[in-house]
Image 1 (cartoon, rainbow, N blue to C red):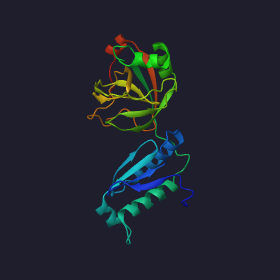
Image 2: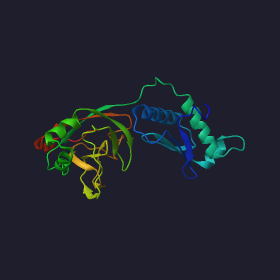
Image 3: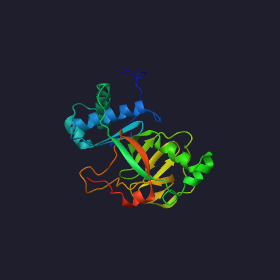
Image 4: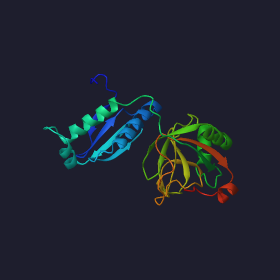
Length: 242
């Protein structure tokens, strides 16, 4: 591929990683390309690649310099060897490779007891609470990436009618399972933590359990649909079963 044709840039991230970057975009087609490359590199199971981390529109490849030198010929650097590998792998991707996704329905209680910011969001957007709920549950969201904490899925995009900035002053404590909005993203806090997203509900699901074979409920590329439950349903709901 010539430099003109490349839809990405590659740059070093410290001495033991490189990042392939498609730009600052939230775009399904771009994210699918990132995840295809991620899956292909993981399938290769190369001994000198220690980790591969996908994001919205970029992929970071971590490598062991010593092991790379053991597997390449010539005077090229480890970084250049990994860059060439990533570019060859990207060029070999087949467009119709099926994405490994799952469809997950997530119960959410939007009661104000579990949604400390839903009133403020509704007022700011000129909506009723019922309209906020209906807008949030009326579409399917793509998991673009996992980050911030184990199991935290960045999903998008919410309706423009619900889009709202993060809080100017983050909260010191956000309950586990809290469903929030920041910009046109929506996400769920897997564990209790500080946070600045606008909290509009809470799910009883367990999103991350380190004791399970697959600890995180979500993975990049998954499709998520929220649905509303009552407080009584929330209290009686059985959390995720392995």
